Amino acid sequence: MATTWKINDVTFAARQLGNLRRTRVNLACDVVTFDAPASAFDDDAIFEYGDDVIIKKDSTRWFLGRVNNIPRLGDPSDERISYEVVGPWWWLENIVFQQSWKRFNTETETVEYAYKSRVILCQNASGDRINSGQQIAEAIDWAITRGAPISKGTIDPDIEIPWSEEVDISCADVIVKMLRWSPDCVCWFDYTGETPIFYCRKKSNLTAVQMAVDDGSPRQRISITPRYDLQVPGITLRYEQDTEHGDVFYETITEETAGDTDEPNSLVSTIELGGSTVTLLCERLETEDLPSDMNSETFWNSHIPWLNTVYDLSIHDAAYFFDKDNYPRILTAGRVHYWLQEYEDIDTSEEVITARADYTVKDGSGNPVDQVVNDEISVRLVVTNAETKWYRRIGSYENGEPVPSGLAAALYAAWNQLQYDGQISLEESDVGGALFVGCKLNCTGGPVDWESMEALVQQVTENVDTGLTTITIGPSRRIGIGELRDILFGFRSRRVPKRHSIRLEAKSRDAEGAVPVSGPHPEDVAQHREGEHRRLVVQNDGATKKIDSNPDDVTDASAHIKARKVHIYNGSDNFHTRWVMCSGAIDTGYGVSQITVVTDWRYDSSSHKIQVKTRDVRVLDAGAESGWTDKATAAECD
Image (cartoon, rainbow, N blue to C red; front, side, top):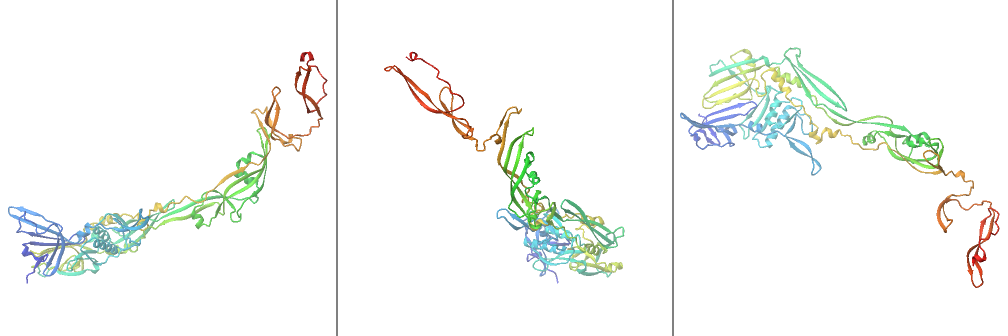
């Protein structure tokens, strides 16, 4: 019975289409091509770029894809329009993989989730490690959310591999990077359902197909080569991590081996992992003990330097209002940050200590110039229970990348297998589709080792019109497996993650490690209020002239020298008022007399006599009274 081929539910014959050809490839786009040989090269195309195409073999779906190219041929002997349709891998190649990251929203001032094309492969949204298969599944799920016509089937890989930080990579690139660590896996799509189903299976789980090469069935060509050069006898993996602990950097190396690592062609690979970063909060505090006697001159001299310049110092009446048992020391250097208070149980208090001081001030010659009593002095200090030492605490800790477990053994299991590389062509009346990507091939009728070689099918090309099927077996070229140096390059090409913690917390390590400059710091603020001065001497530079206000020079104990208002006769005019520094009236011991003095006079012409005005006044008896002395005669008065 003839096979009916349909495209979008219309037969190929009805559309005058032919030369149908399908190529299915591991880790690449499946492609279907066909021609419209009856069309002129300038005719309207049956399908446009981007159109969805479904091809059925009888009633079973055979392919689903989108039109990607429409080549036109115009030649004197041939004229046609061709069509190229690409499979679902096209969506995986064109959809950029993204992951959710926490970010700070400056408008709402909240931390929220957002998707970014910077990704940490093999790390989930919670920051935990996921294996290679789970990472492939995450990429498929993302593509589905972005409109890829795919369903997710079985995904076998389960290797714990190092994290890798990538930017702007496609979902297809994610899958390729994961399978670089699992060369015994292949991927393909099953087109028979409503939606193509993506599979990624290990060799051990693939369907084995037995093919006879000597039974007379139509074979055009067989070429098979065992790849002993790709067989790895042993693997040594060394994981390097740079760890930052405060201002100290050191390197750790973890080694993992599998197989015979002494063989010269064993694989040795150094894999750099993201190291941990520990930010230390460090502060050195310096303190001094409070004196047992707060009137200690040594204590006050150390905090009020000018007290060291006076003489006959005496401190008394010191007062404070804190418990010296709880705050026995003074903070002299350092700053008490919040973490010292919270985690080291350090208490501090800003306090003022007061006292009174008596002292003498002398000049350069040692002569007293001022004598002060009850001078009120004070100092503001930070008292504490801290001790003099370095205080350290972890301020922030960024976990290093976890060291993969069992990776060497998993790689050895895959790379130690003998790979078979080659191609087989067979011609049938109708392409049967028994061999496809997702199979492992054994051949009978050839060398014995072919019967159990389990060669991976990497590509199958089916030409429907001619019945020719070409099968390519061997290691995947897409993941760069051709020589041992390609394997090593695959390990070196990964990017070490630097932002795996930022994804979870929306803050950088610099922010985490910032040490807030806050908290009490040393204070040594001295104050004083002047007391009573006993003596003050003001002198010129040469000390040849002095004004000495020594109270001891005042012999009368009742004398109180202060500013007083007095009246002074100027000798020619009258009295003037002055403010002078003087004492009150004192008893000098001098006698006091009363005399009558002339205050005014005039001549009376009627009586021809001189008239006078007099006033009785008291005077000091400082000497003998003189006799009368004529100053004028009556005639002169006339």
